[in-house]
Length: 83
Image 1 (cartoon, rainbow, N blue to C red):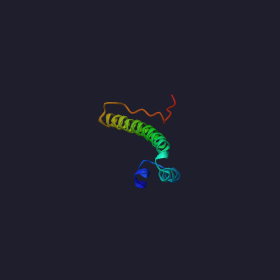
Image 2 (cartoon, one colour; image 1 turned 180 degrees about the horizontal axis):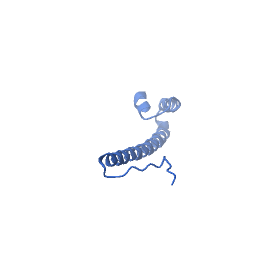
Image 3 (tube, one colour; image 1 turned 180 degrees about the vertical axis):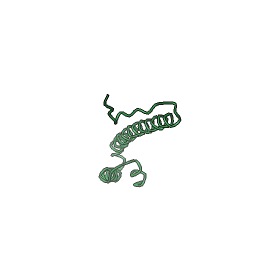
Image 4 (cartoon, rainbow, N blue to C red; image 1 turned 60 degrees about the horizontal axis):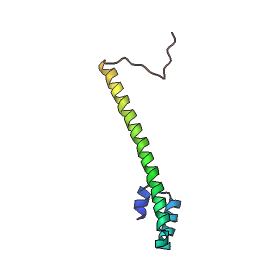
């Protein structure tokens, strides 16, 4: 179970707290559910952020492909060209 919790991005401190709650028995189930709900929300937010990063990389790769194939002129926001 600890390996699964680690894969869920729980810290050592969170895993210790979760384990202590497990040892308390069924009375701690609501608190464990709350911990898991909070962890799930954080993981879903991370997934959204990662998906946005992957989408940016896909866009950038397409942009570079268009530049290399001559479909688009190269423009960089990082290089300032004085007129």
